[in-house]
Length: 231
Ligand code: TZP
Ligand code: MG
Image (cartoon, rainbow, N blue to C red):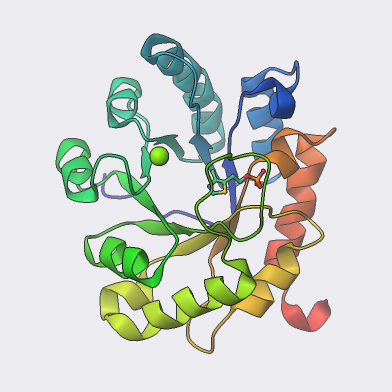
């Protein structure tokens, strides 16, 4: 067993609200996105009750497992345990990381949302498997976004992590908030410091609401994987 090696390059975070998913089926959208190259999936569902969320998570896990892509659950350690998926993503107001780790075990993938240097260093040093850093750009997808940090804010968090401690310097990071195909390369390269860069981008609407989620994922993956010299 052991903890799976995770590729953070293109992280799909789901949203089932009509404004983003429309009348499409979430499991079909996720399958298309994974076919297009999404490397990690998070079920983020702020509205379904527990039973419905477990049912959706089971359907998504059936899809992601077929493609060898990990599935994480936003906020809900209980849902992750019920489904037996690969882990969770917790925010600053959710279950704390040490408690989640105790419940899920050493092999679970646990990510933490961070928006400040302090939050990022604390999560890294408590053993987060990765950090979600944001909100980079304003977005319609999340209504209670605390702070827009921009690429400069993202860069300064990466720089602080790089020099804080070995755990902070080595923790994988993804950025989130308003990431689109036409700004992803700018975000990746403007935020990079000499010793630490983001490991991937986390995307909601630019894939879930895309007319063709498979093609949108393919486009993102090309952008995040193309070396800067060829841009
Ligand atoms: N956390 C910070 S911004 C955000 C979350 C979940 C939503 C990002 O959505 P989008 O559509 O990729 O801007
Ligand atoms: Mg949360």
